[in-house]
Length: 147
Image 1 (spheres, rainbow, N blue to C red):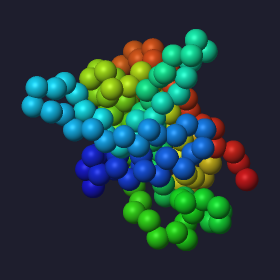
Image 2: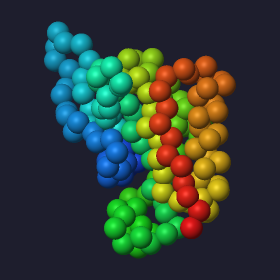
Image 3: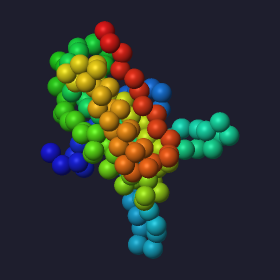
Image 4: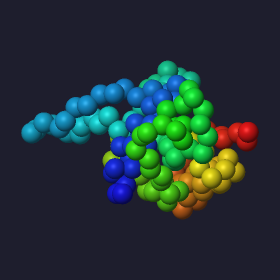
């Protein structure tokens, strides 16, 4: 599965995280226009100064080992599954940032293998962004609790 297909799946799964919702806008570029708006993964939050901030909102994975009945990503649900590597998350974030689509990252995840394994992957993605790409933008990373 290519990274674009993963992005569609994991951005769609992330929209159910109630703390930050996607605008849902879809606006294609026109002949003499500049830029376009895509549904996949861009959400908006607000800074302390009231300024709107665009974030890439994705899950690390929607492959979950748990079967929480309220969750769209529960293991018994019949949905398309995907998992990003930490490197893919960092590369996507930097790519969107350099094209001025986003100012930061909102990263959450279903639980794959174990909560600790999932957190290790999230932390690795953040580490790559900060240490290898020197990304100083906003990062909102959800923590995964142990059961």
